[in-house]
Structures are given as structure tokens and as C-alpha cells.
Length: 326
Image (cartoon, rainbow, N blue to C red; front, side, top):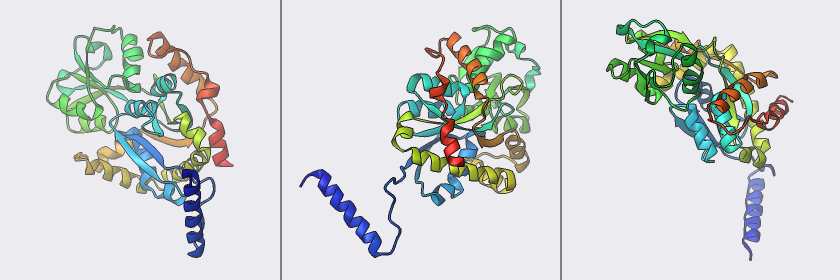
């Protein structure tokens, strides 16, 4: 008997057992298990909340979690096809599309206010231009890192080599500032608020006036092609999660605060609330994404970080969000 027939017989037997027990049979288009990537800074917390909310299970979705310090690492995992879905800002997405054909299935949040340049308090620095000759902690290759080196630093008159870029994960930067091994950090929440609350650093700017920094949920094209039904069911979960962020923020905050305290961060609720308030969570698929992404892509192309400007009709999949809404 061939493997195909053995498998068919096994499925028939399982279906018969389900019917005998009076349980609902799995549909023919059974949903795929999702390998979900997310970053453990504040940008990844809406996704973390979704995973802990019970909404995925409610819609018959199974998942595996893949947590990393920043979204560009999730992007790299997706290019390597180790993860199916993950969130990051436009710069990382564009690089991921260039390297691995990744596609956007939704915009989850805007985080421009969470990304900041924070300097050591004892140095009394107030402007980015004063970082000349200084050691700056930066998560090289991240969206925040790219915006700082490609846009913010040049606008402040800093050329490559004018400051020493110290490559570092965002979750190690506050301790490096406290130890005075770096003079400043390009970081995201909640680490900026922690540094300020502990008297280690001063925030001299956030990125919101330079880039509102939409954070996208991206997918591998393989996963979308294999099971578009899973993607649509997944986006329905996001639509329900959006209501929690709007109507029950206390519940959301409790889940996310518990995550950080479980990781050993000694952060007051007040400090956490300030950090979370900078994240604008509004899952959807805005119709005006292309101009901002085009601008980001032109910078990345100029800096030779991508090989070509993406074809946005292939890179953006608003049809999947539309199906989920329908």
C-alpha cells in the first residue's frame, strides 16, 4: 500500500472517530500552525498581547513563539524561512522584501515617539551634533539604526566616522550607559524611559518628526501562498485585539507589564505607562502607505542596502485585510 493511501486511510479513520464522538470534523482547509516572530521591546508588545489574549485559539489557530531583541532579527529569520509572520518598521520590511520577497499584510502601530536618542545625563548634551567624537550604542541594521545613521546624523552634520558606532542589542544599552562604556544610545521603549527614570540618561529627541515609523505585520510569500485562509483568520484576530487596545487598555497594560517584570526589569507602573503611551496601536491597512515606504526605499537604495525599489503592488497585500474585514 502506498504512503498516499496509508495517509488517506489514517485520515478517514480519524474522521470516523471524530464523528463517532460527536465532535466537529476539521474542515478540508485546516489552518496552518503559525510561527510568530516578535521583538521583546515595546514594538513587539501588541503582538505579544495577541498571543496571550486567547483570540488565536478562539479562531482555531495554533502558533509557536519566536522572541528576539529587535524586529530586524525577526526579518532575518523570515528571510531564512524560520518564521512565518513578524513585525518591524518600514526599513526592515523593505530590506526583507529585497532579500526574501516578504509582504505586508497589515499595519499594526506607529512608533515614531518610542524611538529616541538618549545621552548620558552627566555629559549635559542637548543636540545630536554634539555626538561628534562620542560612542553611540546602536542596533546596527535595525530600522531605528538605519534612520539614525542615514537620516538623522547627516541632518545634524555628522558624517560616517564622526562618531563611534557601538553595535549592541537594544536591551543591553541602558546598562552600557550606566557603566559609561557608551555616551549615548539610539533606542526604543521601554528602555528610554527606564534610563530617564533611573537618572542615567536624557532624551534629546524622538523620531516622530523625522518618521512616524509605522510597524507592519509581514509574512513570507510561501506562507501566504500555502494557506491564505490562515492569514485571513489571523487578521480577524487582530481586528478583535484592536478593540481591546481601544476599549480595555487596562487589561492590555497588565499583560504587557507582566511580561517586562517577568524578565527582571525593575520598572514602575508609572514608567511603563509613559513608555506604552508612545505606541499608537491601530491595526489596519491604510491606503497611503506607498509614499512613506517609497521615501524609505530611496534612502536604502542610495546607501546600497537594497538592490532595487520594491514593486509595491507585489510587496503590499491589502486584499488579505479586506477579506478579513468582509
